[in-house]
Length: 263
Image (cartoon, rainbow, N blue to C red; front, top):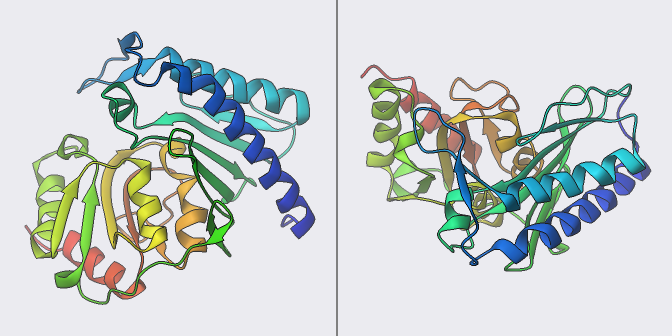
């Protein structure tokens, strides 16, 4: 059963409390040379005490307020709830930016109703910016957001966090077909780039190798601002993998066609 407007308001208010707690836990570590561990993998995958402290703080609040809800987070084990509702958490999306002192990171908080993420928050406590969305609307510190009209890739500003995220040469070549046809392409941004799509400053983000906690909070924000967010094949983006976020559906169609074009 869909959540009521009253329930959405209640859960959005609670998500704001989670963001506040995560920011209080993470900010003392920012620009203070926190200890960094490598979680391993194909590329350097850092985690800091700030990541762990922020997620721990959010999980404690969820357990106390909604013990029946599930929790899926980056740093701790998944908790299955008795309710279909699951909180999806990334305490610091953009840990590389965090450990290099750049404010292009954020705490991602989504609520999934068992079918899709129904609300999302991206909180940047250092800059005091809180992006939120419920798929029908999106806001920055309470002010409405709208994406930018951009019908042609030749006029588009396209972002991607890093070329390292692509699984193989063919995947990177597909991204380059899009980037080379765009007016401007820039690396960096993590979750911040998606919020810039929602705010109308960036036209598209094209990425790969993502996890559910990397994207679920961002989908209601991008869609709520009037944008489109799918997999490279045009399917559901909530499970991660390859993702395209666009402010204009016409641009989205062009990008999908290029991603699917023969090499």
